[in-house]
Image (cartoon, rainbow, N blue to C red):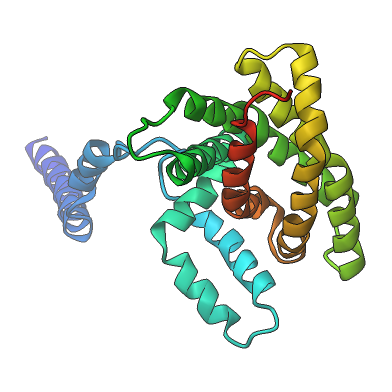
Length: 265
């Protein structure tokens, strides 16, 4: 009886020894299993990130490369230009804003350009003793924000779908419909809306259009075709409003001057 009990005790001790041996080996092979689990639990929370529309989006660098390659396709240094432009933080950020908030970004851009153009126009024509007409500037800013920016967005998207190619013939067709439809329509809206905000009556607005519309359109025919050719031929559609707004700075100086003229007799 006692010998059997001693044998059973020896077997139990042997099994327990084997178990302790495996536990020690397992601890040596995987020494940080528990600690790594705790580490992952502690550090699994994401870092604080800026809102999507403020962050610099890396994926839009391809759009920038597309712009550079399309504009410089005939040049052997197009890849170098694309690489240099992709490092410009503001350009990359602006492309991301256009992608995330296209209408708002283009509207704010138009508004800022109209503000700068109107202030430039006032600086040219005003006397040194005269103060700036900030009410006039606010009208220009509102027009760029509410009317011109959204209209440019939808117009260029419409034209790019109507004539998706960038060959010479398609570019000329875009220029023609721009000069015969969009340009005259926006000129009428600009002159009429600004006159209305200045308190002019319907008959006075008609008289202003009769006096200023043709001269304004003649100036547009002399200025805008080359700008439209560059825009439609070389610029991606998402950047076309920006390039048009850049071209329109000088034109807007002229337009704000025309809008500030006295009432037609």
